[in-house]
Image (cartoon, rainbow, N blue to C red; front, side, top):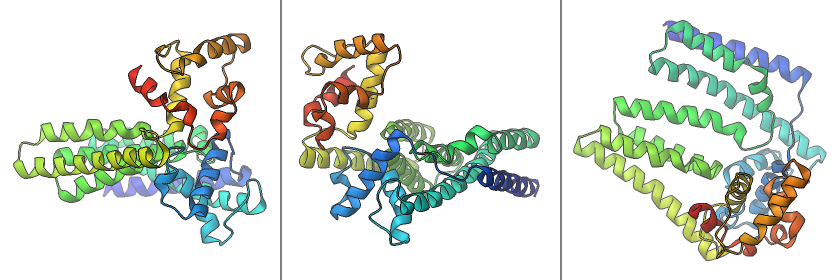
Length: 313
């Protein structure tokens, strides 16, 4: 009963402070990544082809999510920065705010499962749910705005499965794993860690069968995605964008690519470029500055060995 009252109080405060914030700052925050997400989703829907034709550029969940308001309001296709664009993006930030509120409730449930005291759970939920930085982040049009509630919900499902195994729980974990993968490929590590841990914790044969089956489903989806990218893009990987971002992090960290890869030609220019500016450009801007054809090509043929560099380094 106390948990119900606490959750109701958290919901009330979280909703109230977001309504207050939206009264002063109702507009969405457009970033450089927003262009890529929005245009990818627009191209995916306009082509009428399956989403995996475009997944080598960006994972499909957030690009399609940005297009949902235009589809529901029958204003598709919409141009960037048009009236219909901002009208649709206001709907997006409302949904993202709702996901943020759900994330706060899930955080409360997660801390309850971790044996936090009632006041510790409420204090942490209020701290996160009313912090201006987290609320403003819900207005940013990037995939990361959706990832926090997803990861928290994933953690709750894993903890519940550690206590009580069920087919529904394993199926839910599979769905969350696939959504996370199609939202940010980085989250492939979640099923790679959680399913083996669950397998080791449960000794019952039927429990291990369910866990193994769920893990194979996730791996099968990953394999099909790699195969689709290979067939339609000539690229054995998951996302060029994620690989390019990883390339930027590696170059900033001073990790040189092997000389056998064509990417070695980008290493010295990037290091010199970064030193001269003393403020490294994002990887996309850097690649565009030295060879615009790399970014113009929708299949990034010039970077076919990029994923080998990322994985090999």
